Amino acid sequence: MRDKSSGELQKSMELQKPWAGFLADLDAALTSSVEVHCLGGFVLIAAYDIPRATGDLDYLLTFPSDVSTLLENLGGLDSKLAKKHHVCVERVGVSDLPEDYDSRLTELKFGLKHLRLLALNPYDLILSKLTRNSPKDVEDVKFLARTQHLEFPVLYSIFEKEMKPWLPNLARHELTLRIWEEYFQP
Image 1: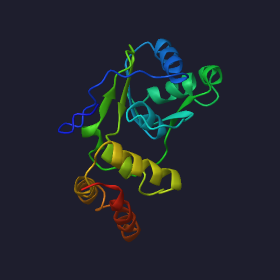
Image 2: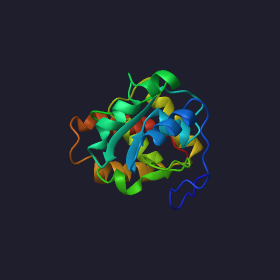
Image 3: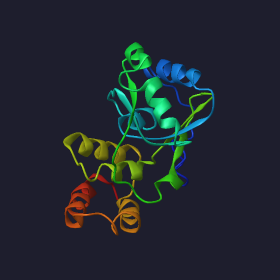
């Protein structure tokens, strides 16, 4: 359940197979705390209960930053854990995000000791899909707008303040947002 005023996830989260085992094994392999900024399908599944599967946990950054290589070695595409659980972690090379997305991250609490997973809030998650705008992204936008009771003016305000000043091909992005506006309930 989401507290609409703060955007904080208020439930204890449970992951299904294969994610529960994968994250438990990954956490057990770590010897110190690691913060991971997560996005993509994993966040949609883990935080927002979208009814679909994904094979990777996409992430933007780790803190400390030098842990990213270790994380990829332990749980990346060709790792032992990935082969065991058939899922992996994968660093996203480039993603267009609002400038202050990190101030709105929400912790996904799975009872892990070393691994601290922080997820994009639903508005930032939608805006992360703006540039690619694939059919799957459009379905994700529809799902989030409907199930999280999001407001288009809030989305557009974040876009204007935190993305519009630096995005190339601004007319295309604004057109996409206007098309997406119909997915939001007043």
